[in-house]
Image 1 (tube, rainbow, N blue to C red):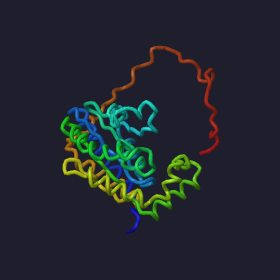
Image 2 (cartoon, helix red, strand yellow):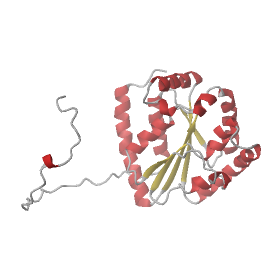
Image 3 (cartoon, rainbow, N blue to C red):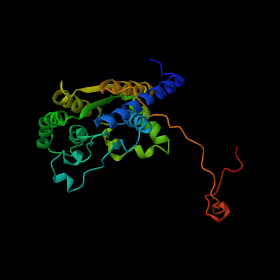
Image 4 (cartoon, rainbow, N blue to C red):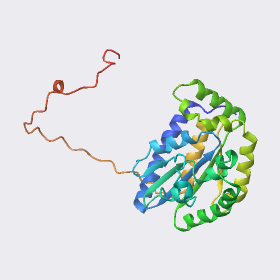
Length: 263
């Protein structure tokens, strides 16, 4: 399959941004609560999709949750407890960059949880999600699927680009050699949590641009929203000066203009 044309991608993304704004308007107006989970292998493209969705929306309405390693106190809590506090109130959208499914993925493969904790999660998770849905939350789950070859290519890109090396953690180094183990964990997770009420939607992500458009388009298809965007504001003429004299710019501490002579 050929890579998606860049010009088409940018035009289509711009169109989808307008639709996302319409969705946001409906979420705020009707007090909807939306939760979207983004899961998948390392370097599968989750972050890129989350970034594109969030950059088009008001951060007071749409927020991204990416939790770090649990603290010692959090490890003693009910497993879902630290995620519950980030669930949306009315009029909010929450995008989880990884979620409670950490237990069925990295924690299982890397041995960060016990077997009892793992199986309890698989038993409890469908019930937990049913409660969220019954409460009126729109719960949408995406799994980003990337080939082993494409993942390796992206890993190498991160290593060679100083601005991307922060994306490559110590866990990534170890998990790189556990492709089969992660595949087994994903299949086991799906067998328990890919339910009719709360299904997993798989996004093929070897082509990042195509994956972003497909995911955003699909997300928009799952939540009914009105064809309404914020009303255009008509700005009247600026009021006349009242005679106030502003402090001269030269008397203020300015950030040096390093690019003053570059056009």
